Image (tube, rainbow over all chains, first blue to last red; front, side, top):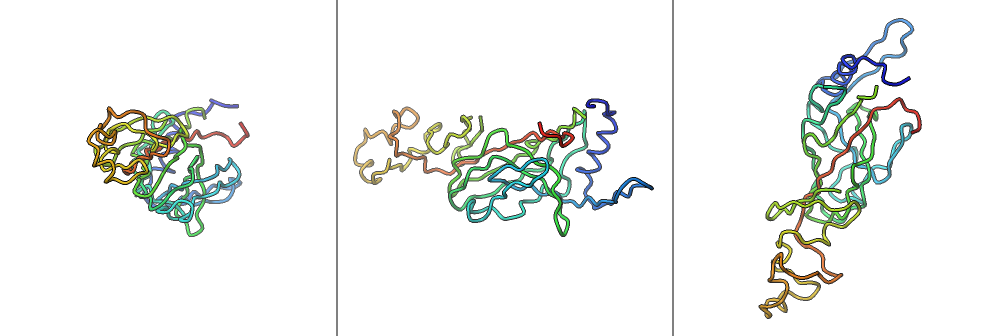
Length: 152
Length: 86
C-alpha cells in the first residue's frame, strides 16, 4: 500500500540517516526488532555490474578501473543536505582520476563506514560512464545523486 | 545523455549513452598537436591538414581519438522503494 506515509516523517528518517555526521544507533523498543547502527561517512562505490535490491553488484577494481580504489570514496562528513519533499541530494562532490582505460560503469552503491560496511542504497546511473581513459576524471558533482522517497 | 567536459578549455557537451566521448570533437583542443594515428610532424608539415582547422575540421577518420583528457560527469536518481521486484 504505497503513498500513505506522512512526508514530514519520511523527511525526518532520511535526514537522520543521510545527513547526520556522527555514528548513531537506532534502538527499537520491545518487539521492535534488532538495533542497528548508522556509520558515516557514507561511501560511493562504482559498479561494473548492477546489483539488485537484495544482492550486491560487482564493484569496480583498481584492475579494471585504474585510479579507482575498492570500497569507494567518502561522500564527506555530511552525505546529504536535509531532506525536503521526500528527497535529498549529495552535498559534496566525489571524483576519481583515471590512470588507465576503464570498464563501463552502469551503476553505483552507497555504503556506510562500519568495520564491516553495510550497503544502504543501490541504483543505475542516468547514463553509464563509458570511454574513460588515462588522464580523464570521473566526477559526481554536488547534487548529482538524488535519493527519492517521494513515493513512500 | 551524459555530459563530458574538456579539461583543457572546460567546454562541455552532452553525448548519447554508450558513445565513446573520445571519438567526438566539440572544442578543437583535440586538434592541437593531434596526429590522427600518423606522426605529428607529418601534420605540421602540411598547413592545410585538418589537424590545424580546429572545430571547422571535417569528419575525423575512424581511427582518430581525442587525446585530450576529459571529465565525465555522472549522476543518478536512487528511488527508495519497498524492496519488491519492479
